[in-house]
Image 1 (cartoon, rainbow, N blue to C red):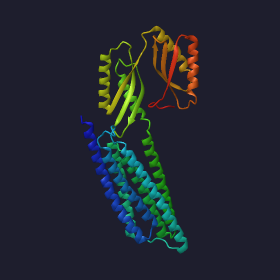
Image 2: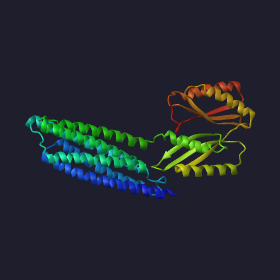
Image 3: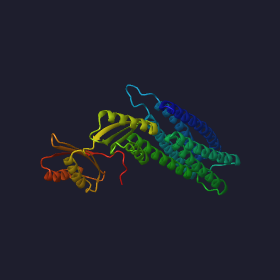
Image 4: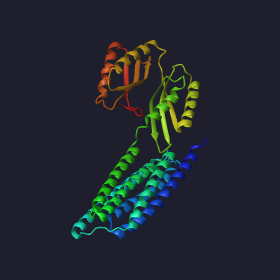
Amino acid sequence: MEDKEMLSRKREKAIVLTSSIGIGGNALLVAFKVFVGILAGSISIIVDAVNNLTDALSSLLTIIGAKLSNKKPDKKHPFGYGRVEYLSAMMIAVLILLAGGTAIVESVKSIIAYFQEGEMASYDLTAFLIIAAAIAVKITLGLFFKIRGKQVKSEALSNSGTDALMDSVLSLSTLIGALIGKYANVYVEGYLGCAIGCFILYSGFKALKESLSSIIGERVDKDTVDGLKKLILSHKEVKGVYDLILNSYGVDRVIASAHMELDDNMTAKEIHKLTRTIQAEAYKKYRFLLTLGIYASNESCPKAKAIKEDLAKLVYAEPHIIQMHGYYLDEETSTVTFDVIFSYEEKDPASKIKAITAKLKEKYPEINFFAVLDRDFSEEQE
């Protein structure tokens, strides 16, 4: 099995190679489109060329992001630099927004100039062939980027692939506009340029939203959460898995933590062996660094079991309570502690907890109840 550092290097190499091909392809497209756009006097082709230029710069930023994110952890950044990829994605989004704004401004200028001077772009067969070839190149690059992005789990490459495929649609609209202008003698250049600019702005805002969401921190996909829980529960000693938290510090750089409910009578030696085994399995399957905490099942005491059953009835009668866990009766201090997870729809969880503990206090006046308002970090809520 390849170690994590080797896989990271291979992933970086694949991203750099793919992005370099994208830079080369887009640079050629920029040169051809600017040449044709100037000869034909077509603002939409020049705007399309500007979009290709941002694609090339995006690929360059993807390379820089991949290189920096692979830096080894140090004293100041012990979790590594994996999140730099999210920052580079945000910079790409800003770049796209600037390109979209520029496209709209230039297109509006072209529309004004048309109404003032009445001139339209002029195309020949060579220009049409070059535009058609550019469309084919963008489709090829788009499919290539998406396939490689999926292979190396790079959201940046996959997004670049989607962007390239969308660019091919935009280039197709430019070709259609050129044909309409030449054979129907109808001006559509500036309007197409505005449409292209608006589409670029939409793509930029979407990319910015996605990159900011990654930086803020997103919920891990349900399949991964369910798979990790299933792995932990596959050990017969584990009676429940709670408080699962997965913090992402880049692709394949996840630090996870969870609590396991275990039998009261397990020894420290048995718990140590169990946690080490589960941690090794989690790393082998998911490459997660997993830390495990312990909850005692508290089932050996009849009174604790009876109180827990009464508590569960009250808790799960509430519509917005997702889960109760971490229950424990400390007989020495006559204190019951438990954690409760409310859905995000609940507006006043503290009042609900107060009402539940008040009812329990009526039945068990000698017991002090202490509830922890926990938060759901991993389960998808309906």
